[in-house]
Structure formats: C-alpha cells, structure tokens
Image (cartoon, rainbow, N blue to C red; front, side, top):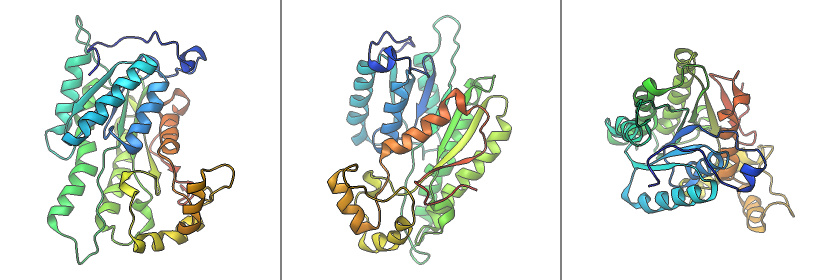
Length: 301
C-alpha cells in the first residue's frame, strides 16, 4: 500500500511531460483490479495521472495487486491504495469505500471525493437450463449485480456534485446475444445495463453513467474455452469487423489462433481504452449508454 495521503504527481514520465495526464487530481475505484481488464484499466487511468483505489477479492490476488500498485506508483507518481473486499458479500462494497475514505480523506476537513468508479469485478459460469442451480444463481447475481449496486450506495455520499463524476460498468455482449448456457451470466449483465440507465437519471447532477460490452477478451476468464464453446463462437467472430487476424500487424500466435477460432479476441488494453474514454471530460454529454467495446460483434443501438 502506498502512502495514505492524496498528492499530486511530480512524475517526469513521458505521459506527464507530454501533457497527457488528463485525470490528474482524480481518484478512481476499480473493482477486480488484480488482473485482466481491471489491471489494464488501472494502467490506463494511472498513466493519465489518476490515483487508484484498487480492489481485489481472493488471497491469491493480494500479491499481484500490490505489485501492480507499487509499479504504477513508481512509474506515474500516483497514489495507490490496495483493498481486499468481496463484492459478492453484502458488506464488501461498504468496507471498500469506508477503508478508502479512511486513507484518503483530508486530514483537517475530512473531505473525500470519489471521481470515478469502474464496476469491473465479475464472475461467469456457463450452465444449461438443466444444470442451473440456486447456489450458482446467487453467486453470479451477488457479484455481478448486487455488488455494483451496493458499491454505488456506499459511494453515493462521496460523488461529485457538478456532473464531473464518471461511472463505467463492465457489461458483456452476453447481455444481448443469447449465447448457449448463459441464462444466468447473460441475465446478470442485462441487469447491470438496466441499472446503468436508472443510475444515469438518478445521478444526473453528480456523474455520467455508462456501460461497455466486451466480447471475448484475451484474459484468464477466456483462456481455456472448451472446443464446444470455440465452435459456437467461431461464427460470431467471423462476422466481427475488427476480429480478423492481420499478418504483419498482430503477433504471429494471434494470427494463427484467429485462423482456428474464426477471429481474434480483444486485448485487455483495447477494452481499457474505451473505458478510459468514458472517464474523460470529453464524454461529459454521454450517459445511460452501452458503448461498443467488442470490435463490432454487437453493434450498439
């Protein structure tokens, strides 16, 4: 954990010297920050000068999250706070916010503002109707739906009051594509998109609220898809405009896998770039939307 006090950066990295630290002075919560898309989002926001409250759940994620936080602090001169909290537990979101406030509030005034919230933590199981069970239903909905809702509830007193806040929810094309065995997972992401629209109205004087909807991404969650899943996804990837593997541009292993799978997956950095765009001041007149972050597999309406 870094020094428990917010400070402006004195970094001389290329981002700072080039004037690209567009989130200087902002504080962001990123749930599920230890790996994959969450890790890439932390790197992107940190490179723009944003201080980070980095959340993880399992004990095995403690070391990689601490290492990432230390690396980002050293490279970009930002404040990083690492907090273990289970977004699937009823008390987890409140614990995350209260711990962050205790570390970052102004020592004299007690002022604490959360400028950006990235609801990234999520779980997925692929189960058919016959395989569905109550425990899995509760597990996925508690993390993917209740977690973001309760995090917003806990963070509400600390959001900006001038519309400068930014909330970005990580949804999925599964919310609208009707993939096999995703009755529960797809339902959780559809619920998250519905909450995005509701929050955009309730928080209209505080923050913009948007979702992004990745398709397959080259992360741990998608590392070992079953042959059946690959076969079902191949047709979708073949019709995704930006999924074609490109000789001489993409790494050779990506091109070869794309030939087998029907197309390439996104990189975590590509998703993080869309998220970061929605965190900027330039996105100030965009709210209540689901933004395409899937290469065109699912066109946003």
